[in-house]
Image (cartoon, rainbow, N blue to C red):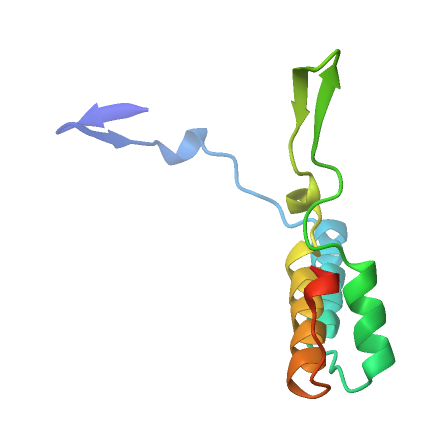
Length: 112
């Protein structure tokens, strides 16, 4: 990297061109298709909405405090954000809860 006028300048001969890897691209396309499929799911059945609200937790079930003899010795952070479909699951659960409230008139306190 050379500096001229206080701005960094990268010489193009030192930059490696990124080659397109088709297997990686196909994996991302597959994930994108799955995300799109989850986003397009319509909730129109009370039993399905209840099932979704029960199966998808309101908060990450992996987050824990490890306590020994009444003292916290470690904390396991929420790992759900590493799930590539996390946003779609949360959105699906939200749509199911909205269906139960708006269309079925149910109280969703037990699902939260």
